[in-house]
Amino acid sequence: MTATVTAATASSVAANAASPGAAAGPSAPDAAPTGGATGPAKARGTGKAFRIVPPFVVAGLIVALWYLVSYGLLDASRRFLLPPLHSIFTDAFMNADTMGDIGLSLGRTAFVTLTGLAIAIVLGIAWAVAMSQARWLETSLFPYAVVLQCIPVLALVPLIGFWFGFGYPARIIVCIMISLFPMVSNTLFGLQSVGKAELELFKLHGTRRAVILKKLQFPAALPAIFAGMRISAGLSVVGAIVGDFFFRRGDPGLGALISTYQSRVQSVELFAAIFTAALFGVVIFMFFGWLGRRVVGKWHDFGGR
Amino acid sequence: MPAAPAGIAGPSLEELGLTDPTIGRSIPPPRVILRFTGTGMTFPGGTTALEDVDLTIRSGEFVSVVGPSGCGKSTLLRIASGLEEATAGQTWLDIQRIGYVFQDATLLPWRTVQENVELLAELEHIPKAERTRRANEAIKLVGLEGFEGHLPKMLSGGMKMRTSLARSLTLNPELFLFDEPFGALDEITRERLNDELMRLFAAQHFGALFITHSVQEAVYLSTRVVVMSGRPGHILDEFPVDFPYPRHPDMRFTGEFAELSGKVSRALREGHS
Ligand SMILES: Nc1ncnc2c1ncn2[C@@H]1O[C@H](COP(=O)(O)OP(=O)(O)OP(=O)(O)O)[C@@H](O)[C@H]1O
Ligand SMILES: [Mg+2]
Image (tube, rainbow over all chains, first blue to last red; front, side, top):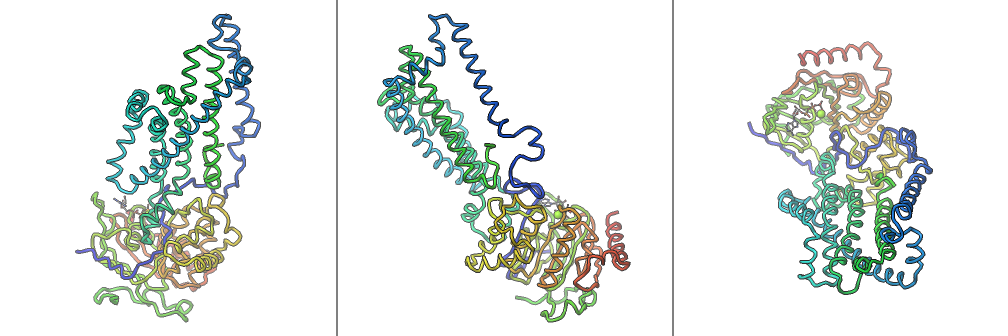
């Protein structure tokens, strides 16, 4: 017997394809409430106070511990190892010269970070999209994303310096190498999170691959993409500082500055520079959290807060 | 387009219980729109899901299929839609547009009800204005007015199913394939949706192949109930349902309904053992 599917003129097929557990997003319970803390979440305490107070308590504990070490464990001659918190403010953050240096290098680091991150985002998404389009592309390209992830970039940094010079291009390359993988893997994961049923729904209408990508896979991947951006953003800051820290040539960014302060044992300034770097990382991490919530927060519980 | 191939025996209209005047009136005479002849399906892994299935659906017919789990009911729909290709027999389909409604609503969570309902028309390149008109009409038909701007996560299970149904309606299908569309719903919602679906069927006269686990639902909705055997699935028996449309929910409590449901259940049980 032969299979003769005379699908006559079934050119257009209206479909609501589905298979169990294959939704492209969070499946809400019946009669889902419109946001707010309800149900079991309330029992765990998700009120505003519960979200704001604990971080401050932890901050208080850290400060207390800090002073305990500064004044309790270290004698005056060794106090530079952990200068009292307030001295970092009075001697560094309120010192115009120091802040001038820190501000200038922060600007350079920010430039490197953001440029590297932007390139990593574009490159990572493109890489993942390419892999999502064909099995053979995925099998041939994914291993290299993993290899990239596993390369000890720190060991490569001097080499990158020799190859590309010690200017901005080399620093940006370090950033990209460090922050690319989360973009690739998150985007790929997001694109592949689309359920079989949704794909069939599109395919039943003879939808072209590019349209499926645009109308189904890419929107479905957005939450994962933004989560990837957040991680990459943090890594990009690290990349910018590490590259700079090792190159220590050209216009100093925060990394070079930290290295200088370190060699001169300017511990108060050193801590001020480290705090600045950390604060910068937090700010751009939060920015991408905010951006993600703005774009997908309406339909997806993006990364908690 | 070939006419129904000669030599393939299908039940006559009388046998199908399609002589009911409430269906036949002012509607083009029923014609065969889907026919399985000796259809069989053996998956690459070696599982034979279907064996020698003969089934004919005419326009204006609402055919329900009941059968034990895993007997190949979904596979039958997938073959009808072209998602899967049968490995034996012939599948013959003579229509332009199929509506496919599955157990999950498969709404896109980032699209509002309105946008979700417009999706298929969008994929079929129907111009925006026409799309919107059809979507509005479909939304009205399934009783979702006022929820156009809601996102799926704000909808109950029943409303999601309605949205899914409306999405299919925008393409005005001649044949609907339903794969346990109300299986995940509570009984009250399910009965309400049964009534709405019946209303739609009575108004639009599409053909329907409806898969369900509920004998009650099958008898209540259909012009014919088909009972399938366990795997490999084949058709054990067919029961015409002669009650006129529109059917009243209380019809479920009549003696005739109980008797017919009993017959179907018995056939189902016998096929099981
Ligand atoms: N793609 C596939 N490859 C291999 N086997 C399959 C495939 N799809 C279905 N089957 C098998 O074919 C049989 C029939 O599956 P099908 O989903 O059609 O059953 P069903 O009658 O719809 O069951 P249910 O009532 O549980 O939905 C099952 O044994 C299933 O495991
Ligand atoms: Mg099934």
